[in-house]
Length: 156
Image 1 (cartoon, rainbow, N blue to C red):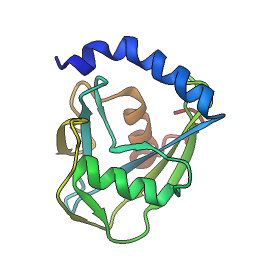
Image 2 (tube, one colour):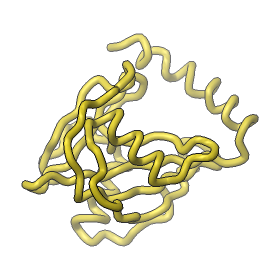
Image 3 (cartoon, rainbow, N blue to C red):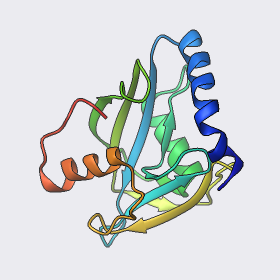
Image 4 (cartoon, helix red, strand yellow):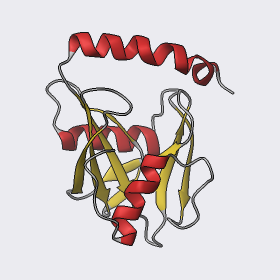
């Protein structure tokens, strides 16, 4: 287990406290990228457990698309080749009060060199029905909404 993952329970509240003081609301983007055979990209971070869609925070002055392009490229080696489809915007209150996540479906992309910056431990491509056991509950809920017709929730 990486040192970042071991320190996550201590560091997360400190970082959230900083973000709460410096921002009234936080916003993140995540991309559900599909390849030619219908597999999806998932990432495992060095600082939190589980498998998640590639993504990250939207910085001040950055558009949703620019943030998604940056995060997909850095974390998973995915360069957007066309506009992604906004699937939904979710409140992430259970994890962090005032946080929101915009989920995009990325169908048209090309591979590029990732720049994970010690943030990503692993990237995998997997069929939506063959997820790793440690796939996050939120990722599983989003996949059910996209692929199984489960009603779209307002909560991440």
